[in-house]
Length: 362
Ligand code: SAH
Image (cartoon, rainbow, N blue to C red; front, side):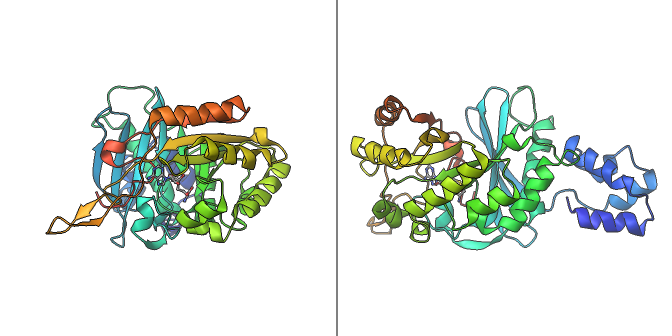
């Protein structure tokens, strides 16, 4: 919802200031998706606002996974660019919205489909918040194909869709304010998580501007050599420098940080790799504040083998997911060494809505 525009209309219509609060309540909290349906404002104002759309974009398609636990929306922005946004239910009665903050991503991690599409532009705070608004309305809508599960409301928001939040901090920060504002969407800060690949100064900005939300770091490789090879961002913020930024964060916030670790077969899933990860974590002053989330690699059609007319392989997926046995071994090694660790269930892989599969194409 474009707040500035609404404010201008209210001013032009010589409406009292409290009208904005009524509109915000109706849209952000009650999930009303049409200004004409806001019963708390005068009829004349409704008919003026009727011409405006609540969402800043159009949703072209919604795909629902077979198990009904996730859905992915293809969104067409006003300038024709496309992004994806995902709704997942990791547990009964819990709905998390996974939002994008950029069109594409400039980070270019070798295993991530978003990076392969290149970077187009940053999203505005409005475009970020509208993804949550869209899913809120979709869950409330009677036509949503996801059963009769209750409660049909969004419980969490994770910035784990397309893009790198700390490269679009101003707009992300503005969106965080709207999402957590008691007069906005009123999410508790603890229900919001930001994930970063690690950008110099990024975590510091979070600590200064919005320390209440959860922080996740996409680590994936506990040694610079491998991290450099597959995650170019590591060249600007090596593991040692990342550690310094995290130690500062711990000193100020004393809050837990999640380390995301994708398990790739034979690349980073051996006992030696687990030992390296353990060494990295143990080198922190308070290792107990780090929680490892293991995710098995999700393949995507963007990374998969493609063949030319002569059936010659032109592009092959060089990454293979670890087996679940290997994931359990890896986790157990960390647990035995007193490191908090969980294996994250991957949701929405059949609709290419899982981590690292968002390419803004289908
Ligand atoms: N740029 C931020 C936000 C994106 S979050 C970040 O990197 O943290 C998306 C998460 O999915 C990241 O942890 C990312 O590393 C992970 N991911 C990317 N490709 C993946 C894949 N193919 N399988 C599983 N996870 C993947």
